[in-house]
View 1: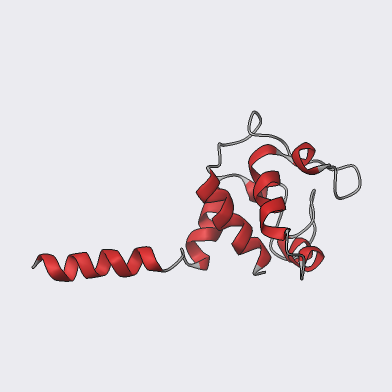
View 2: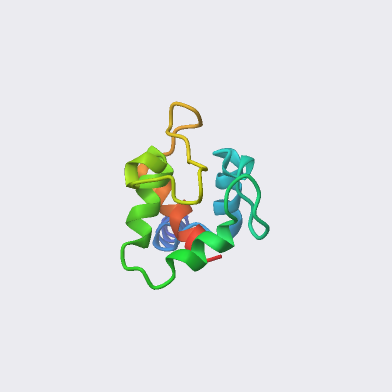
Length: 108
């Protein structure tokens, strides 16, 4: 009986979190307080961010740094005067969570 469980765990760890879990994480980390998936709000939409970074080899690393440390970590503000707050003003985001969120944003 242990073999199927081990196989399931191995398969689950081989694949990245699905889009629904990434979107849920974005909600849990309060990203939707300023961003949305399509229309702009207080901050640019995730779709606009993805379009802006499309084709940039440094996109994921820049987004991870911005997600974890705020706009000032990567020379912000990036979108007019709006700035992304650092983790003193919002829930903590681990490196792994930031990578997952960055990949999800870039897929929009």
